[in-house]
Image: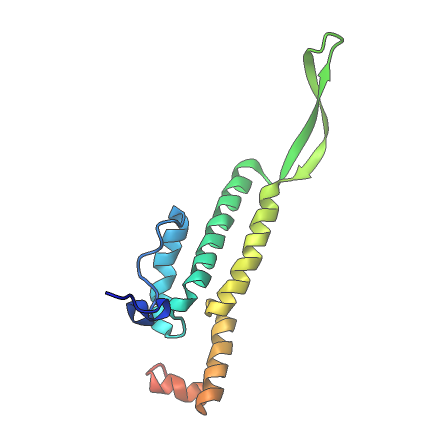
Length: 151
């Protein structure tokens, strides 16, 4: 039996079960956002990779946040002090550096905002999508909200 094209599988909808290769937290995120995305009818199966990226970035953000919570924003740097025999006899404090997890967390946040905006996962993004939809249908946002019983 021939398989249908990828974008047509599952009636063109995102699978409710997350891909097995995603991390545990990314899978949990998938289970949280896919029902919402499906309810908006703006995301299709072909957008699955974008949803995967969002879930993965969220997992990276949480891992980095946990590291920062445990180890702080900055790491202390020390230089070993040795005697003439080469034995370490102490450590001198030489300064601090930013915890690399801070950069990871900031990068993940930027990606979450960008991808979330594309998926309509922020109030502003939803508002922008409603404007686009209303301009295409010729109906105002208020009329569309009345049609679906929200006003």
